[in-house]
Length: 189
Image 1: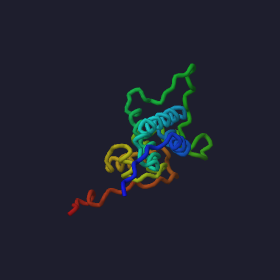
Image 2: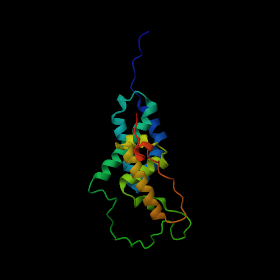
Image 3: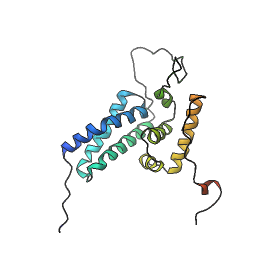
Image 4: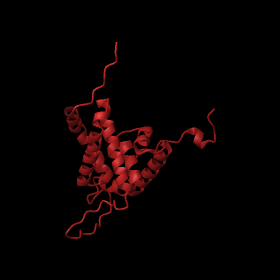
């Protein structure tokens, strides 16, 4: 029996991907860039990159992961730009923010967006990917193009920063402990 020739996915399948993946990609983008308009631009760019490779995709089921990778790599490249500060020009200067409590003026709810915005971009990315998108250390490392050790150290630093920013009374997960051979001086045989 001859192997079946693989077909390129259709534009209709891409439209289905966009409708299915948009909400999740957008939520992740908002947490990464802390700006709704910029998040929309980020998702659009990621989906445009996905579409530019659409004819080469053989497994439509994997396309959502490809779009997420495009989103994260695009955000990472934006973070590396010196000009990226998330600032927008306005006609009038905003009033200075005098409320620095992450729980807001009422003390009831934590403004997660404001707290995450205070983290450096790579720390923010590992927190969002690990705890919001529920990716493993390995998946996060693969998406960010870094080692698993970097993901673990950035996660630990980010959680420490979040504890400092949030103060007492907020429970955060413990970072993934390092492999025992890395802390006990043992070796793999």
